[in-house]
Amino acid sequence: MPTAAERRQYDRLPKNFRVEVKEFKFPLVQQKTHEVSCSDISAGGIRVECSERFEQGDKVTVKIFIPSLNKYHPGFLKVFECDAGQYLQAIAEIMWVEDRTDAPGYSLGIRFLDVDQDDWRALRNLIQKLMREQQEREGQS
Image 1 (cartoon, rainbow, N blue to C red):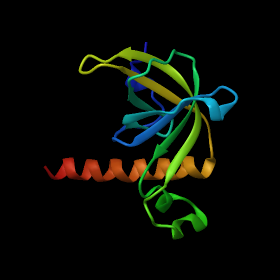
Image 2 (image 1 turned 180 degrees about the vertical axis):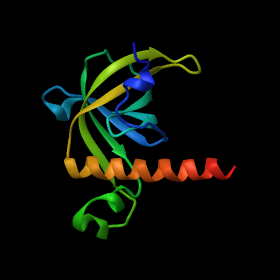
Image 3 (image 1 turned 90 degrees about the vertical axis):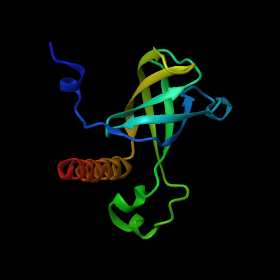
Image 4 (image 1 turned 45 degrees about the vertical axis):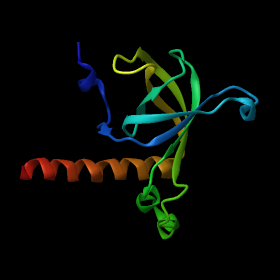
């Protein structure tokens, strides 16, 4: 049986981005926004730390604030280099929920279900660049 690392399709990058999570129920505007922090991210999803409990299988919307994301976008968005307000938004699913041992709350594994393709490519390109830089630093040590 493959290990979790072998089953992963995308590299995970430890990164602490601010994330907003909402239940994907209608009407959307009435759903409470939960501000959480990302502990790692991949092109397939994120791991977040959250004070609220969600259930495995819950559908959510996530908004991940990623400074410099537009720099990795194809086309004209590269022109807009202001870091303020750059984010990736996706419809996602809670894949697993764990009680945190180091603090109150929960760790959530969230898989992207529907994300804009240009945003997804920008995220993938950003992660690849940061992973290369990390490997080069480790190689120099």
